[in-house]
Image (cartoon, rainbow, N blue to C red):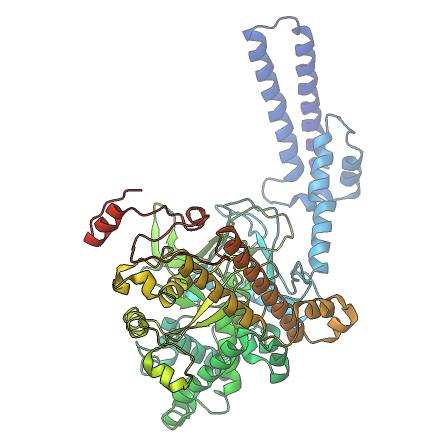
Length: 626
């Protein structure tokens, strides 16, 4: 036909041009001068242009319609046969072979892979999750004009991600629900998504939906959005403007934060500080529900038509907060200040503590023209391969916080920590009398210590997070104060000393010993040892018999024990290296300069303070003598 005739003509034209190029180069090979190089470049350009024309006519068979490369390649038997026979290794028509491979079989294989993973629009399995995914994409396109196509268009690159209905933790192989995968190779810095702020569930949207009389300006954002969520999902349902988004939100059982666990599952966390945090959050959510909805003056009693009791139940309230705690994003770069938001599509991305990507907001438009509206934006923090899962960071969160609010924990979490309670009651005269123990001596600095920590806004019982090999400076400052003796002060007030520095050898030894005792006490609260947990995890049949929550609990409590044991080992090693495990250690004897011990300069980034520096600091002079 006419199309094939044109293809053959221009293909022949390209081959002739290439032949001319080779002949010319052969004839002029001995003349290595400037003119030869110019001719070489001109002939090369001629060759490239002719081949581009041939490719153009291969892809576009007519001027008034466009057919994708895949459609052209399967246009008819004669076309396919021509391409399969075209050229060979190193042949002049190798481009034809490459074009066929890149837009024919490879595309088909990609589509097949997408369908197998439940990612393709063409999947007809009837899976409700895949249907919900497709509906969400259509809603984003229709309501927010979000470009979600895998095809490029004028000014828009193909959308780089695709929804997966099921993802897995790379280490534990546990399910992590929906996620977003790379549709194609992604480069560091590529834009991954932009979602209009108007599609997000915020306090402002809640006020518009429920009225300013209900969502008043002083209401907490979490409470406002929780009311809105229950209203949209359970009250108006099919009529909700966010129906397609709400349909992809998981059930409580699919998220499983610890505040929704049964007592049987929580028993697997015995000894862990997570239990106390879980009980506290459960009571808080119940109290907030009763105060806002269920009490005598609650919204259910005041407005039974707008807030029916059968809809605004504690069960639905719990679901709403499960969604908020596990998916809400704090947007900090909005024009009107920061706000809490549920961001459709973006909240499908899973967490990695190693990711440096964060979701935030900006004004819509480009650098020259701004629309006045705002959008949620995300850029890739690294390169991704095709079909690799995309990650963002939810923040530097410990496993206890992740398990409590998000329903999962991360193996090898660099921000993991365990809260350790440190409580030191100064032996004041009144406290000694209360204890009725004649062997105890009254601390002459006891009253002054209590007054000092009251002025500092602290209590004598404090929870501090301990990490695998470090602990907060605030913990050391608190303990240095509480371990002060008259031999350290020599009549000087406690306020004269700098507790961010080592006070004396004896004081520091007492401080580190106190931390070891506190960490050891926390470790003793677990009914099982770390070795017991390791044995359970290694027993695959037994471990698989446990529920998801119970498996998460066993892993979590084991990691806490490992962290605490490493902390004790690090403290004991530090005491040995600094010579603090010996007798006859020195006291400050009234010196407020402190004492620099071995390793302090590297550990705390400080040098020995001089008397002049000490005087200047007390005068408040901004002089750096370091």
